[in-house]
Length: 321
Image 1: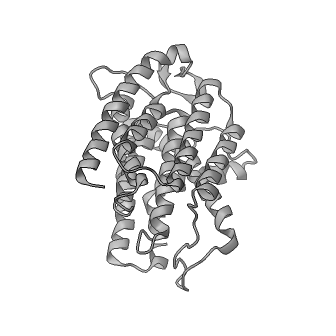
Image 2: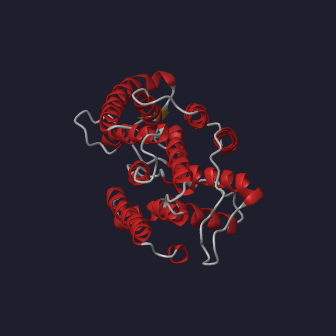
């Protein structure tokens, strides 16, 4: 992948996602892709289009057109992404519920693992006793990791800019460790560029003030792309240490584990809805969702920086873990 490819991918993804986003904002009322006040614990006062994920996926697809043909494995992975975007958009429209989303996530994970061969086989030297290999448990463990991180990004999408900001940080870090000529790397470049117009609208930074949300299509897509990149980068010889991958997505993982653990202790379904996420607590504490966003993005950057420092400076993986 040459610098020209990267530049063209960035420019094309940015242009296409901007145009698609503008078109979808106008079509959202007729398509029923609106988040109305009071739905799903929302705090906004007006109906907001849930079309960010569709625009990001369009930008990603556009970026792939300037690079080499996708490998068969990458094609299977992209099929998993398309499945999540389709089911996520239908859920945004018809509110299909967590069971249907879970089936889609497992389906995408199977396409990625059994079709694309993207599997976690080695967890690295987490305990200081040598590499932990998974053997026959590799595919089941990978499926749990894929579904887990998809849900982590779905759950962290609770205040404006948080899921997109953390995704931008994780994707940028991942590009340091992925093969530069791969279709996956080019797709992640496109996803990063496509996130920019979404974040401008989501955070009300543009002159038009056309606010949009990611929707389930967007949050699941981002989680899937990141876990796909993390697996590929961490299983390549001399690539990202598996434990470093945890640092790059520390905020979504810690928040999801804490919330689901609390719900189970209370005898509730782990996917039941509430306002007990870290971003909710911080928004109430600071009396400002924007303040909570800035604090969490700073913390996510710090944690990712610590993990990357350990990778570069060769800290023992057991210490990083």
